[in-house]
Image (cartoon, rainbow, N blue to C red):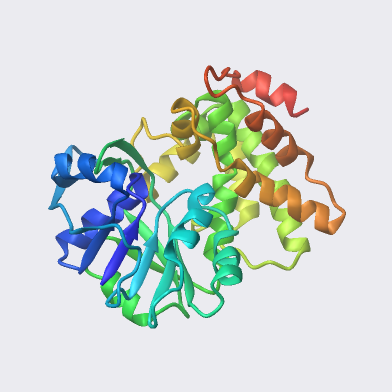
Length: 327
């Protein structure tokens, strides 16, 4: 049995695919959410091309893990993780924790707080937006990555669900996804779509510089990473700087991106929610501090995002953001 906690865009996307494939699934519902879930009545996922994937409402539970729960699939934001840990209490025997969270801090936190319970990373490689209770829109191909040393029974449950299931060594996919997610802050500050980020010359120049700064620190720290693309960093950097519209068209071809798709941090800003910038760009800043090699571009993005007035966030033009970063 899988219990899924987190009914945002990622959670709904995973729940729809698992449920349609007939996997044993329960959906965690706090008392304040139950009525909205029951009123929605079904899981609905709008997919690229106008197709909708629907599934019956899974059984709801206010317990994160029962005796028969084999996997607790955590699809919350990082800020909610400690609340999940507290609500879980003492995990039952045989439970494994599966984190889908952005960044690289979730697994260490789970292992620190629950050292006797296996914790696995399921790296989310798709983009989706939350539309309403149990309703989301998928704007890319639905792909996920599980490490080669990950639980083979979990791999079996994910196969045949319509999710493209990739492999990675250790946590290299988590670090690779973090690198790509460094663009989320750029998108949030300029309210840009992925097409903007990969087409507009100033935004491409900013992303190339931010990415280069991060890769330099990660490599200096001896951390293994794998970018989610069939190109090494040096080639991807040149594509960003000189590829013009080809950068966007290649990303669209590989990932199935919709023209209007935008980073999740843009959704957070528009909804007035706290962002995960500290778990993304902030991770590179912290790594630079440990190496005594500052990461000023990522530090400035972190500062700018955290300074936003979420009740009325200002939008920077690409040229203004480039100026603020000194590029």
